Length: 111
Length: 114
Image (cartoon, rainbow over all chains, first blue to last red; front, side, top):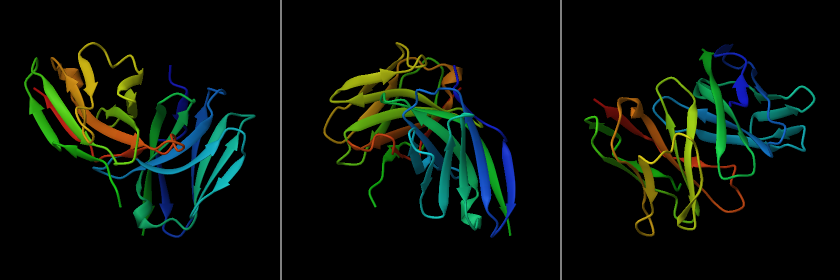
């Protein structure tokens, strides 16, 4: 069954504010957790991943936090821009040759 | 910047007909995948392919589906006898050795079965 899911279907933020997108997972055996961004009419685009033995990983304007105690994953986007408007998917990679996607959160950025 | 390309962008077919969706993965990638996304829903894994054979497949990937790498650049998904419920966006993806979690996706082929 599905092991990755998202808390909210939509999130609306003001341009310049920070965004936090949350995700819950149930499969503790996953080796990596991944965030993808999907803009309208396009395929998913890799943003960042985090290995299961880490708590935090930072990228360019993005930070992923992993809380294994409560099986929670979050993506923080700093200084959200209109170009960040998209659907964000959390996903898991369990060491096999596949990525399992959760349901998406649509991020709206208000100017 | 290298990218995964898919053709056609939109395919309309009659129920029961065979369709072939085509993909050109990124040239130095060795792992290839097909995913599908029914409108408004999450992205679902179909199959992964490495070293000229299927590595893993989902329950969706039944006997009606097949994949092939006919030459050094193309990667195809064939649906033998399409059903209405096969209507979806189909994404091809590829990844390189040592970075399996970072899959590069194409723009997708929208398949409409009527």
